[in-house]
Length: 391
Ligand SMILES: Cc1cc2nc3c(=O)[nH]c(=O)nc-3n(C[C@H](O)[C@H](O)[C@H](O)COP(=O)(O)OP(=O)(O)OC[C@H]3O[C@@H](n4cnc5c(N)ncnc54)[C@H](O)[C@@H]3O)c2cc1C
Picture 1 (cartoon, protein in one colour):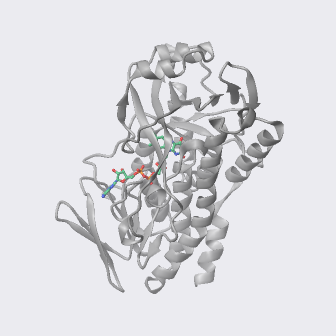
Picture 2 (cartoon, protein in one colour):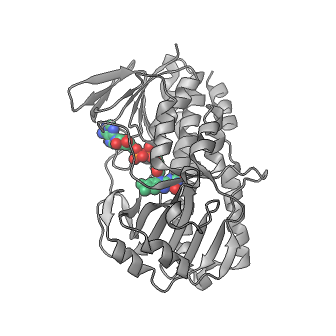
């Protein structure tokens, strides 16, 4: 048996990391604070850079089954419906592995793939300590767990991050997203095979299909002057949402007329951290790098993290845990910081903070090239090279 790893947090990042670590022969336990695994009713967008890694642990068929592949009809429009440009859905090699997924489906497929007994729910981590030889997590229910490595995948409000870096405040970006899903049968004419986005002054509206096209996920981004706690699931008022997009292309109003419940999600990220690792403890996913959703990369980057970590730890012996975790940290921090910055810039563009809706031809081309590069990235070769350098 390889190293033992405790993962704190059973979200998308923690559950994928557990799959990747087990696939590399490590002994893994996941501790999740909630009494049961689950997710709010909203969509998540998977792009080729993470689907490549899901494929490596045998999960591509499940993604194909529960996801909804998004095709080349995907498009940007002005708020009045005038077409702007196609959306980049393929990597540089022309591989289209871009899927809308319901968050609950993604969590379930990641959890179902794990052997029985790996996930322990009802365990809220409240403390952490380590010696030269071991790391230990303490839970609110009085239990504790020891391992060679602890991975904090406990989200934007991470309890464990403070054992790596001093506490800091997340950054509010002055907008909120209303989001939810609608059964496709309520809007049967809505295309169930594409990602569609409308751009207007300080607002944008996005839809993509999830659950094999049975549901359409919508997100309306609007300005907000008051900060609210970063909740993913605070209820929003459907009438306020409808009013925000009044006068936009008619089919948006038609879709919104069917909305009965919606979630309101305040948009926060954090400045890139200077380090993710201390001794036997490292950070992963939103605990390390919460980002704005404007490149749809939060979940995708957490999946890349998990595969990088597993690839590096696979060849590591107990004496080299700390250098191995620092190698993972260095490999991931630079790439993720660029994506965090890119998400901020793209939010500015989408909300028309740039002149002329930010849609000049050269900008469109540059953005498509940026996405192609992002989607073509494979984290494994570099992680393997680092693992070899540690032997
Ligand atoms: C509504 C919404 C839509 C999004 N859409 C997209 C998208 O389209 N594309 C994309 O790439 N990203 C998207 N993201 C971001 C993406 O979901 C996250 O970046 C991604 O899930 C990585 O999360 P994570 O696993 O690191 O953290 P989380 O998903 O926050 O999971 C953290 C887990 O840790 C648990 N936990 C917290 N504290 C403790 C503790 N003390 N002890 C034990 N367990 C604990 C939590 O209960 C949770 O289960 C979206 C996020 C939200 C909220």
